Amino acid sequence: MEVRARAPGKIILAGEHAVVHGSTAVAAAIDLYTYVSLRFPTPEDNDETLKLQLKDVDLEFSWPVGKLKEVLPELGSCSASSPSSCSLETTKAIALLVEELKLPDSKTGLASGISAFLWLYTSVHGLKPAKVVVNSELPLGSGLGSSAALCVALSAALLALSDSLKLDFSHQGWQTFGDSELDLVNKWAFEGEKIIHGRPSGIDNTVSTFGNMIKFRSGELTRMKTNMPLKMLVTNTKVGRNTRALVASVSERAARHGSAMTSVFKAVDSISEEVAAIIQSPISDELAITEKEEKLGELMEMTQGLLQCMGVSHASIETVIKTTLKYKLATKLTGAGGGGCVLTLLPTLLAGTVVDKLIAELEECGFQCLIAGIGGSGMEISFSGFS
Ligand SMILES: Nc1ncnc2c1ncn2[C@@H]1O[C@H](COP(=O)(O)OP(=O)(O)OP(=O)(O)O)[C@@H](O)[C@H]1O
Ligand SMILES: C[C@@](O)(CCO)CC(=O)[O-]
Ligand SMILES: [Mg+2]
Image (tube, rainbow, N blue to C red):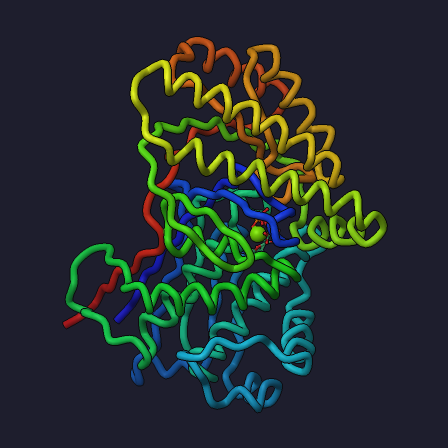
């Protein structure tokens, strides 16, 4: 039997980075997914290896279970129902295993994702042979939460075939989990995110697990209800960056300028609360939508100013902002910044021809544009080969 799990990427409407320091943030799932499939070999396969295929980067890795037993002896027993952090000793052992893969220089960023895989897999299933295949519709390392989508889809697939969840294997098509199972997936995914991000707030894995739109503060999520149509243009600057390094750089700035940065984080908190209130307030007529969009646009510009203040903007992001400003549109970075993806609010009454012109201008700069569906489903699983 094989299980397939999928988990969505996300956009952050307000509050990235500040959320790591206790501020409120608002995020929404987008309709681009990371898929993870998991299958255990049958006795006839006579396969004693743990295999990981990363289709997006065209790489495949394989560890003989005997080798894993030598290197990770204390992981023989697993604890699917009680998520735990990777100890320093195990982190070192996993780092050695990943080092031996001799990743090409251009792909060293994958090391943290592979380490998260090894931790999550061995924690839930112990040292057991399996084949895991990963592929994604998300650009990797670009601010759309690819690391969280990977950790959520992986945790969901692993838990789906563990003894700790009682699921209906005969169900056809995508199905989701109940709240307590979703909570377990989210907790394991957070442990994976810790390995990739260093100090994650948990917002990315939470919105990827539960979907829709959420308000998030200090580990607490509030599911938001909205009927406001939100359309965002996502521009990928294609400038590579690394969330772990950017999160660390903001913390360093906060350590250098404690009082000033506390004020910045507080301002972000107020903006996120206002964004959440606007999005959730009832809509009476078209004028109300236009007014809301104007306020939202202004708040996005204010957030961007504060992100610049945190030191996470980038020349490429500034180019997108200047270009969209010519069309009187508001733009902010999303996710960790430093390049990656940028959001532009597309008001409901904006003509399609204007959007086409803007996209053409942005793509001439070498950027890539997409319009993602916002606020869709969270993680889901599907079984095949059940008889
Ligand atoms: N489909 C995938 N295949 C392999 N590795 C992946 C995949 N998706 C994510 N990763 C891992 O996650 C890393 C990117 O995570 P990172 O947190 O830097 O960016 P992001 O999650 O896309 O953006 P943000 O955190 O700002 O939303 C990759 O370098 C890799 O280690
Ligand atoms: C930059 C950050 O705030 C969001 C990344 O999508 C990091 C985090 O919250 O873990
Ligand atoms: Mg990430």
